[in-house]
Amino acid sequence: MDEFSAELVDLTDYGKRAKNGKLTESQSRDLLSHFEATHELALNVITQYFKEIGKGPFSGSRDLTVEAFHAELIDDGKAWLDIVIDRIQYSPVYEIDTQEKFLDNIQKRYIRLLQRFEDTMGKKLNE
Image (cartoon, rainbow, N blue to C red; front, side, top):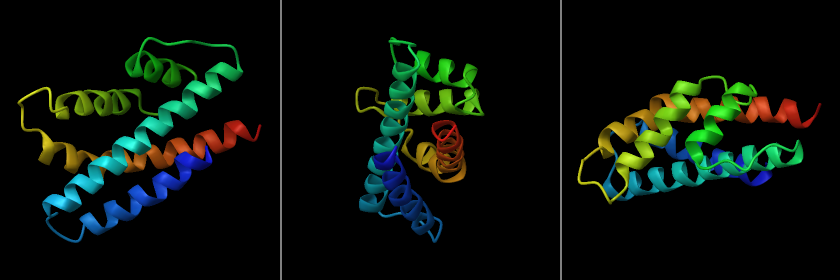
């Protein structure tokens, strides 16, 4: 959880800088890479939590996200699934240019989701 929290601080800082105007190509790459790292660490926290209570394994981030919603680890299942979809669409495997939309979603929606997840997991882990 500590690694996730530290990465979330970095992501939040990048998100705040991004709100101050149009991002350069380098800033965009940094924001995206910090976001992807933070999301992966969130999924790792969820996976570890489920292992400790005897649930899993899950076949992928989508199934893990759905289960996390049912277990009330995340509060907006649809938005978390949107993260999964955005990350898939942004993948260089696809030729769709989704970077601007993805960056906008990170700044306006996803950072808040990850912050709420941190609060929720902090409470769950201290129960």
